[in-house]
Length: 432
Image (tube, rainbow, N blue to C red):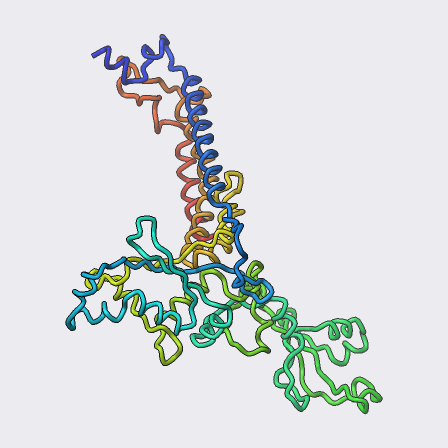
């Protein structure tokens, strides 16, 4: 029994000490384990970074990829079909196998071609599967986005520009007045005489609304004094009078896509593709084209039914990674030195989708708050172990069997304060 105690219990006899447990050995072992784990993590990050480098094609350039046309992407989706022999085709008889006969590899390729999609086929390593890579041109994506009214992000600078210019009809009359101050209005506001006539503001301190009168500016009106010019409207700038939001109204706006030439500058262009569609948007649009009816220009392919065990027409249907986009997206995630609050969750959202982006946003927020809680917990741990002689804790010995392996666990004076701190921490975490 004494031999087992000396082997499995960190008693004073097991460490060769007569009175007190040597906490220095324990801390040294813990530090060694942390450094070892850090080294292993660095090795994994190095291997991941090497595997995530973009694949450089040394062959002939793909004419499909043209940044000047806003079409700089590769294949987005892939399908996998099982290679069937002649006997398998002969068994596709009867009404039960009608769906399989209408959705063979050749017929699915015809449907994808009629839907305006480009395909490329190749065998698997064992030549038992045929993979079909799928992509769409920018014009085809724009047409489908207009059909389903896909919401894309709007350009902040273009929104401010158009809000400051307003909209005029063909005859020169206003369709709607400006809702922001343009450069000409800002220059006029420097003139005190002009402001006294045209600038109006709320009468009370709480009323922060303001407006600017618009007057005729033709050749005849220019000869008149400012106060005698005819008023044709007013500019009422959009303001957060109650200060309910920290974000300006023109940021993070999304609008339905349209193929109208006048609306194209409104859409935010992705820095790499020069197109308004993100990688996840292209995947959504391609799936929409595949599901769309032939009468509306789609493929009308029921891939969900083809993937079912009853039909087994399709072995797999999945999106493909774009190595060039992926590397820039996850570079700061796999970097050990990037703090959680510095992770670009918007890039993750644009590549993997909104659900995964929202998860990473929460994980970064949660990890940031855990860093604060871990600091308080580490201090509490030291006070309960007696490392700084802050408590009269005694290590486990056969003479003192009521204590824990490394001293008393919850008898430190700092534990109640830590509990109060964690209650406030949880409230701030949830409310933030």
